[in-house]
Length: 413
Image (cartoon, rainbow, N blue to C red):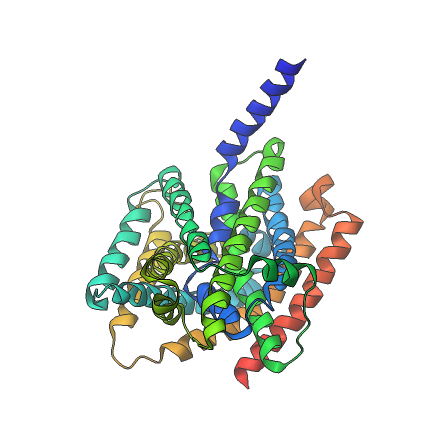
């Protein structure tokens, strides 16, 4: 009896290892240059006061990602495919244009993160940016889905640098526990704006498309869905833990010293005299890893989204000649995004600003599309949302609509 139980558990664990990847990778990419900057500012400007907000954000991330994973497993189609089939080509094209715009702005920001992180180590952006662009291009164009996924999963391991940085910063663990158990409510404009930023940087439209496309390309069967769901949950927990350590690192050092920062690179430089060179170096290395990771995934996600929506061949397992639009778009996004960083006097902040506004406007639309699709009996059968899950999901969408609208209006204003 005991041997049978152990055998079943071991088999289940092996299946999880085989299925694992899409959820963990998608969630961790969200800790990109922009995300790290947001978490750094949250800790530097508000101390541990906003740590508690990461818990409900994690719950929302699990809910949204779970629906994407379920649709991918059940339908065997990407989200762009399903939207085009259900809502028509015109609506799909408008949606794709919005996602293309916001993703390109984020791709530029990732290469800016590469440049900033390596400038801390005295490497010129004219060396780091072209080399990193070539590296991420070769990774996808010359690899297969299996090899690319393994490299992406390996990159996820380097987020542990932020956890190590957190311990090196020697935070007040009792105060951190208190902030999580008895959260403080700050309704000042600055705090509310930061909460909106934390939500906006954790849940992005591209994530749902990439996760579903990855599950389809990996051919995960319905019988293995519970393992895909666990993959999503594990990814959401990991990304929240890493985000929390970034916040508490900056809270224990920068907030305590009254130092305000605007970028992740600023935070890494400011940490050196406060927490030691090892803490600062690890923080900067984490920024480099996150930026390279996202600079690979975001163009890949965009290529998946556009090619699915237009009905073009796509996939890392295909050759360049088999999917020319897919690889052509990926190539254009990578090298155009990197090239812009090398131009003088580019208003990088304004580019990032526009991408965040569009991101905020597109996210609620994507979530509404997802909820309509996942509740379709014809499409999902017995795998559509139940009443309780639907109530939670629609409430989540309502909150996100309000937050993202406020986020967009704040930027416009």
